[in-house]
Length: 291
View 1 (tube, rainbow, N blue to C red):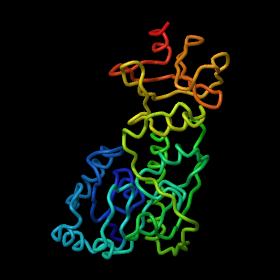
View 2: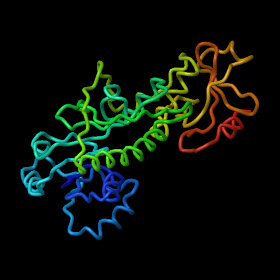
View 3: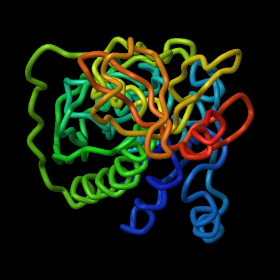
View 4: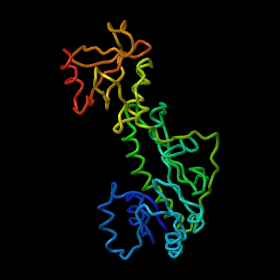
């Protein structure tokens, strides 16, 4: 089976390790996890046609891809929509890091954490013109974990997703017929969130603030103001406000050598790692500045 691959290095590497070297590679970014290992493996496959972030609407690019005569298109975390003329070259499959149709779109891990989802899934689905709307071939449930961040969840799902789509491609290459099931239910969407939209609302309950911090971590980070400086909160935890419960939401306090900010609904948020202006600080170091 001749596979045309779109996406991150780990997916291409997983295909090669399963005995399915791609006939062509379309990289969605420069580098990425697995790039060095992939480069070593590609030396034995040269000359392998490769493109990095090409204009897929360019007739010359389309002609070059068509010249590969692929039997299957495999996409794993490719950051752009693949246009119909390319999809018409061969049937295609994609892996998406959410429990489709929940969190279609480019930022599903962030939205899953922000919304308090306890679990998600990896879905290998058919590639279609619509965004993440194709029928599902394989669904693998994934527990999120109570302290997961957007970054840590994305890393887990991208690593496992690369292996999973290679497994599915290998099954298809072996002639196995995999039943495709339509997505069930109304979709929810996971658009990219602007950096300026991560300002913390301290009137929200501490558990909600915690989800906001974890959803924005490690980048760009949820933020608030502290004096005249920007305070970016990278890690913390919701705690009882105790004797500081009478403080209005948004007010900081130090207790037990730790820095806290009062939240809504009687709680508080303990700051464990922050950026104050350009300085990276632990929560204890921040507390020491105010004692």
